[in-house]
Length: 263
Image (tube, rainbow, N blue to C red; front, side, top):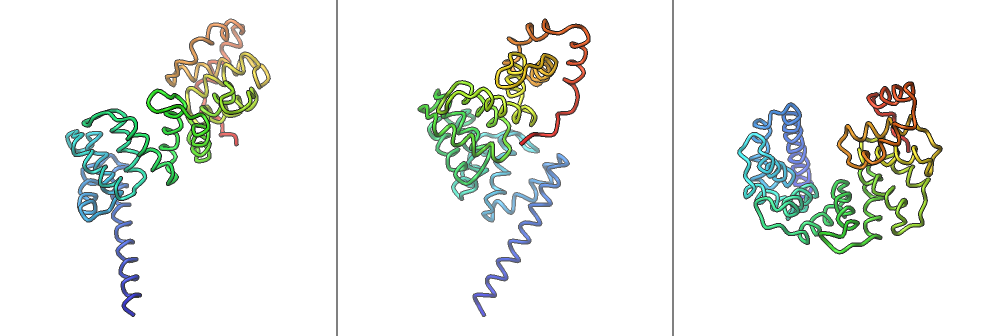
């Protein structure tokens, strides 16, 4: 039947596109972006939105091509208009940073929201941050919490840390030190340096968790090494709370692999 023939042909085409995309991703994983681009190029010209996004990302980052914000915008716009959530998120980042185009926070938020509503975790996280900070777009605590939870459900560590901050500062929720510490631990165990810093502070103060000076310093040292500016104010007191043996143990723990993330 003609309809079934068309469906079978479409499925075969989709399978072939998926195989080519997989080959391109394998090349990109080897940092062979030239090979990846050679695969993505024809697919992008044929209208494959994710390939369009990937080409745009290469032009944005200068991967195997000269960095070209205008071409990045062109390809990412095509991907975003086709409904690709990663394309929407990457185009939002261009508008947010004002790279090659006029900075436009409202447009960035609109694109992050479009990607977030399709389930893109990093977009949900960024939209939550923008809504909480209230510097680029109007502050909306309820929506910031909503999108932080959505991103956290997908394992996005900074969103977990942000939820801890909401409970710590009683923003849209009752203040709950234990819940704050729980979210900071979840974020910290997944590598978020700010979550590690806040967990260390909570352990040092016994806020929401049992006081543990050795664990506190270990998390604070790990956070500082990870680039968190939140750790520094707590470090002098955390060091002063320990003797030489405790300091050595905290330093030992700080460089161990992260523990298995808790739920």
